[in-house]
Length: 456
Image (cartoon, rainbow, N blue to C red):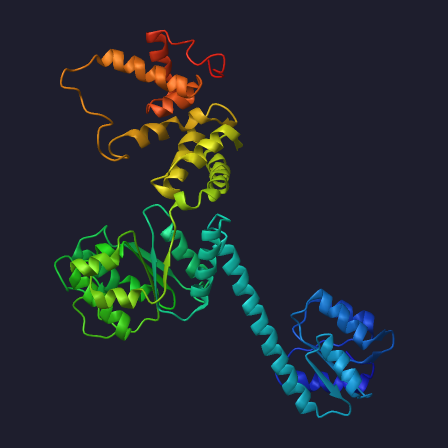
């Protein structure tokens, strides 16, 4: 972008001879029009017929600050150079200039553009992938920060721990999607889902004839995920022999297919996850100590939902929107009372349990807003021996008791404790609304808790 035709022609010829595509502009107006159509680098004259170079530089920086702009001028001075650099110029060249130097500098500017855009794209991928982890609590903010650092690192192994249902697989996918490996494959397998021989074949592959039924060569996940990520879920279930083979690969970055002799060298990142205490397993002798230390160089723990109850509201609303669209339901919201119930619940199954509860509620809902009764099954689950502590709430007295009388007394107590709110009373007893209505009718307890009984 220069006001002298000969200089523009000379620069264009030199740049195109170097394999670069050049467009020219003789005025500030033309320069901005070219810039808005999209360019990767700019050579800008300090003085154009209708514009000042510094003003154009400001305008270009406002439009796209990632495009490097080099100023050319016949009026060289320290002050002008300082002004240009302060406004974000890539460089400042005084006329007359060496054209080879200008071409070399432009090539360098193009490399800068490419790098800036690559970093920007990576940051965008990172943000979008980590946004899949829903929550704004302090533990989740810290989790996202750590996962972002892990994703950008060159680490070949990452360990993710957390209770079942916390979203370890989601974290693994987020790390992959936010990393420079995002365009390569993401392969995953659950180590507890297959017997030893099949798991080994899935991971490392096998040669034809390696064992009975091996009728053709099979490439394993480590090979298929070259330049990408392999996610090993429930790594704590892997048997010691396979642990040894995995350790060899992690240490030497090479392996052989089952029945093979050729060494393969895939470039993969291994993300392992478990709900088990690997350190305790090492102490017990069921997990290799050397593999544990190799995996846990970069270790992140996902907190259970009960430790970040502030995220329940965001998660619940997100799941309602998702399942309403997926199931074609008319549900649009969760009532304040229902949301308080969800926040107060312990969620032993973590995010997975919340997701399943919302899916069930949306599927069965008869109104556009979910109410506490739509989650009455959670109370029954929480009070069952399997979901609770596995013990009876009290022991049968030696002299026996009247089961009918006990049932009536418990229903009465629940209604009194909840001021007659049948939904909450049902939850205290592990029932649904129909079950407690039947007992209210059976025992004539309609007036218990009134006049505060809003559900009667």
